[in-house]
Image 1 (cartoon, one colour):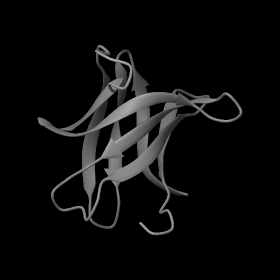
Image 2 (cartoon, rainbow, N blue to C red):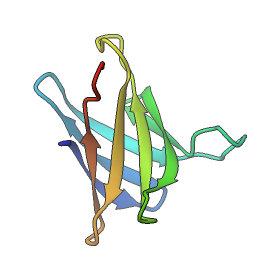
Image 3 (tube, rainbow, N blue to C red):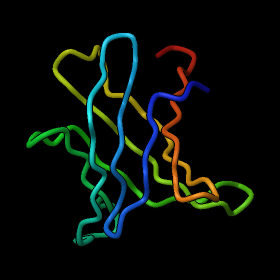
Length: 101
């Protein structure tokens, strides 16, 4: 698992930065009204552009996290990641390459 983002929890989501070899961008993960069972809980934006969505989930050990899907025309495929809260009001965005991805 690689850390590709660091975030601070806000009243309506998270503010932070995604950093990879190709990107260094400020990002907001903003809570949105859920309009269906499969609808996202969060919208992910960089500047005024929507670059992804997030869904509230729980790990096998019942720890909550946000499952994030990011996409950009420069990506070969969408990126799946986990935004995990720390105890100090921060959160980390983890990305793992799966076999076949």
